[in-house]
Amino acid sequence: MALIKPKNPKIKGLNEVGRYAIGVQWTDGHDSIYPLENLRRYCPCNVCHGAVQGEIPSQSQRLAQLSRLGEQAVFVGWSDGHETIYTMSQLRAICRCAYCVAEPERPITGG
Ligand SMILES: [Zn+2]
Ligand SMILES: [Zn+2]
Image: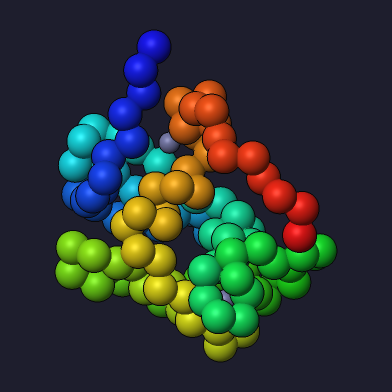
């Protein structure tokens, strides 16, 4: 089965799901739920490099602010003062739903 990853995924809807996750609805019909812990772990900023190791303090996985930056990105402000901007492609790439994890992934290198 050929699975097509959209080149330029766009967000239709963005919402908080309870206190521990956010939901994203994509224009291609895909729905993603991102636990905040995962989002923080994959923070692509220059400090975190998309791979935060070890335990993430609860303060660091709590949402202080969530907003869309136009069509291109999502801004997340964390309770510990950290700020993250995810491009739509980055967000889509870290979706861990059954559909997305079934795709042959690029080998994950340690670290
Ligand atoms: Zn970061
Ligand atoms: Zn998915």
